Image 1 (cartoon, rainbow, N blue to C red):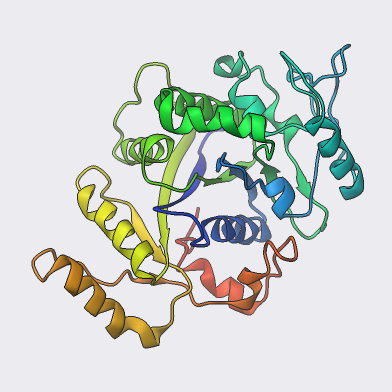
Image 2 (tube, rainbow, N blue to C red):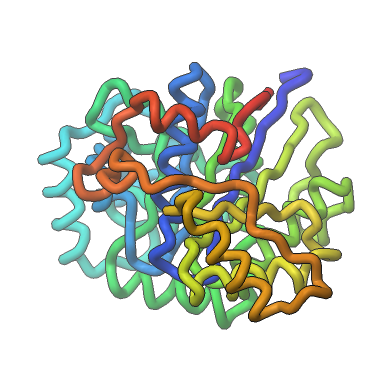
Length: 329
């Protein structure tokens, strides 16, 4: 494990509907297509699960005597078909359970697993795959079920979001030990720049500045693995998206100096219009410029969730620079 570097590519947004999850999926595919070991964590625990948005197949998991998940069991190396996954998903939806959850596994399950802080949970055994064999990304989707979403909303916004962030970091710590070739983790945060999402961005800034993590968090960058953070704030040229994103960026420029804005669904013909919007709202004194990282409205990106996957054509590959993937180690 000596000399390993794991990069956290973290996507956030001021509001929903800006293409944050689409760009997270695109980033993971581009990284995996380069032969890197990449896991996509669907931490948008608000109900839009990648398990439904993509054509993902759940892992075949080891069960306890009561039929529920055994979190400590090693990976079986097998995955269900898409049809079997949907059937298992629907069966879980109709089960009332306590303690260990039934299959299929979701990120929510690991976040409430009591032993997560000592890495006994075999995260690798709970990772999903896409049914397309060309998609080499490992996925861990969030739960789409209303009961579990209601619990997660409390974690994210009301009940100590920092504590749940700690559990997420321990999950990553355990995953790095179990997956010795892991090089990249893409994290899709929930929309909104407060609670869980804000605390995650602050922690990434601490990581980059070598500021020690708070008590209760893993100790990183002091062993064989070096962690790097690349936070991206996704917006569109629409006023209600862009103004919110810029206000957050300006208000936290000291606390989060490394946070970059990615302007999605953008065309060069709108640059003068965008400059006027920014000048009108912020004036001339703040020195705000149109974000340099811009992504055109590409057809393959629009098909990620309508067709359940991404076609890696030449247009999509050109996104490497805008997504900060050039020169990734």
